Image (cartoon, rainbow, N blue to C red; front, side, top):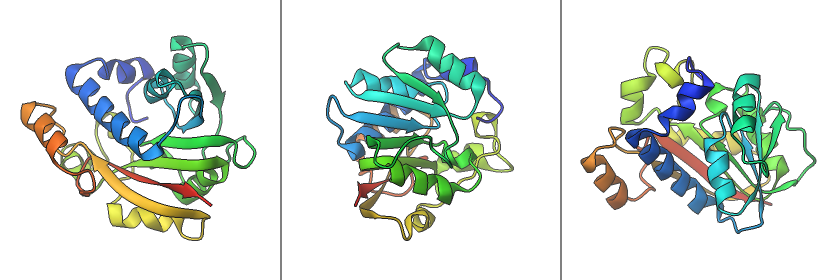
Length: 216
């Protein structure tokens, strides 16, 4: 992902700002998935496994999948042992139809060629619900980090406006699609944290925009 290595990327979530952003994004994803302890969940493009570990901590039976060997090795080494880590391509998930109660992907498809195919694969293996996060072109984060090819972990990422994302689901067996976003002010200071609590996440301006729904 971008130009950062796995160690540096994961360590960013240990900073005050990184932990706040990650936690805010996790809470939005968790609310959209409606998962229950014991449910199975696949994290597509899990990277270093930061979100994967958070979902496992909620009592879910979690599998993390990633295409990058170094990042997957980092995630596997960090554990915990109950998480299953698998090398794979988001465009051809190595699982039968309806294999997982929920499927999540957090700003990973932005780095995958043929995002539409990856979305179709996520829907195919989801038994109940899915939540897919993209980087939001209509956000302050894009203005700061996404222009001219992107910087840091965002280098090479594709950014989308929220109104474009529903097109990825056209013709797929889904229902009750909903669009939410998080991280309206990426600074992570007191003002940003207050606004994050007060503003409705149905507003389309957060740095991470999430499309969630049910499979038919």
